[in-house]
Image (cartoon, rainbow, N blue to C red; front, side):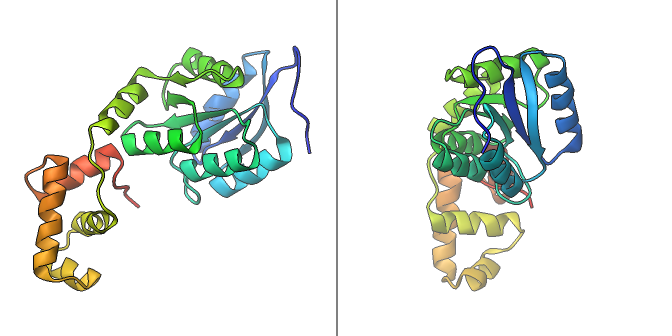
Length: 214
C-alpha cells in the first residue's frame, strides 16, 4: 500500500468521474500546478474505491453522479476504510439531497462542475488541510435542504411511480395498495413539496435530488 506524501511533496490526487472530458480537464489543471500530482483516475465508483485502497491518495475528487456506485456510496466506503480521508465532492448542484447525503457520508469540500480552476484548487488545498470548503451554490443547496420535509419510504415509492407517468390506479396495482391509500400519499407529497400537481412535484423532486433520471 502506498504511503501518504509528507512535507513539500506534491499532493497526490485520485480522480473519480465517469466523464472523460471532466477527467481530462482536471488532469490538465493538476498538470499546471507543481504542488499537485495525479496518483490515479477511475471512471466508476467501484473502481474508485479500489484505487483509493491501493493508492491511498492525499485527496480524492469524487463525482456525486456515477454509473455504478453513487458518489455518496463511494465517499462512505472510502471513509469507512480510511476515516482520515480527504475528499472533494463534484456536484452539478441540481439536487440538494445529494449534497446533504455527501455531507452525512463524510465529505467536507464541495465544488461545482464547471467551476474555475482556482476554485477547484482551493477546494483541493482546503481538503488536504482538513478545512471545509463549500461553493456558494452548494451552500445554497444545503440551506434549501433544511427547509425540505422528508418523504416517507412509501411516499418516495409513489413519487417514483409518478415520475414514470403512472396514474393512481396503476400505482395502486404496482405497489399493492388501495386506491384511497395512493391518493393519501399523493396528496401528502404535494403538501410536503408545496406543489399543486404531478408534473410540478416531479420537476421539483428532480431539481432537489429526491429523484434521479436513470
